[in-house]
Image (tube, rainbow, N blue to C red; front, side, top):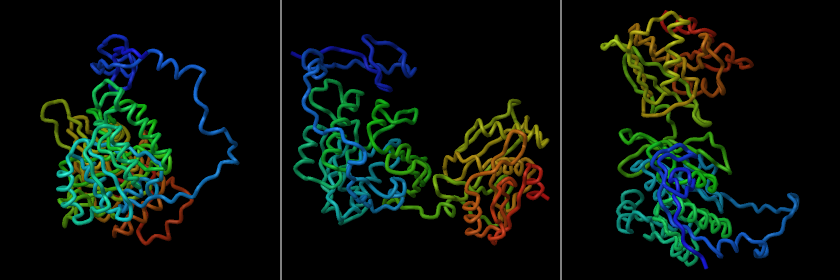
Length: 456
């Protein structure tokens, strides 16, 4: 007979301890251990003994495995398809995470309403059908006959609904609200999330049914629940952005069926999320006159090139110790670039406050915007504007050299498409015929050469 036993489980990584401890010995987090009840005894030992049931499948060689041509499911949203790698794969388990209020439920409900040729089962553990209906009327009115909604948290009853409805796609909002019978811990705990996801994964693979799970994130920005959750699913998507800005980015963190370098950009409106097909025009402020402290960079996020506006402000430190602040750009890299400016280029910034901002609320990790960052800082420090007809791209090294960047042709083509007259690129990008572009391409190997082109 099975017996119950209490253990303490870390809610961050899933590590177990026989007693409560303040700091997790596995992940190092504090105050994350919660008491949970687990079942032990004959039922557990029997499953681990040698008397197991016969396997459902026999091992076969790779050459004997037959692959059915299963077409991907078009979500009806081009940016969503781009991040997924072409659409939803039948039998795939997709996990979508993001901060509260960022628009996760809005995105998946809008997708469900636009999939008119498929039968969708939308399971919500956080909202009633009436609340979902109010949002549906705002997003895509009069297109919900194919989308079935149910408010349920019991995993067993959800599986019964799936077996009765036989949908083409299942959406569960959210995985933290699921509750499985036999697991004594509360919904949202490590045990409930792990066991519920395992059952859903097995159901998706057996019925070849795509399932989209919505997950919350913790204060550190990672998905709430054990790390094993991200290993179990096929695709992990992150929906991010600043709620004070209207733009959202859908980023792929893990994708077994596509690239993890793609991103999708959306604009949050009162009628839902709108796809942004040309992010460059969105991120560039259209001003009539040149202003100091602004430089345009040709960046690449994923496989898509776009131009972003880098804004900098350098002023005399008022309280002795200079401040360094950055929004949308790595602060440690900013400090490194400021040190390069002072040591290699001879500009004294040790007594200056420096503030940096990436326009549009984006977070950019492309090192090719280094040249725009140092140019914007120098422009603000000297109060000399950078021409709005010049675009820049290049990584800055510690010796002050401008290092080559990837996909230089795509960056130049994007700047040319948006009407820029010239672009400064690294000199060490070899093997490219710059004469085929109508835009003037200026090559620079050192910071001094780039500054001479910008401020002469």
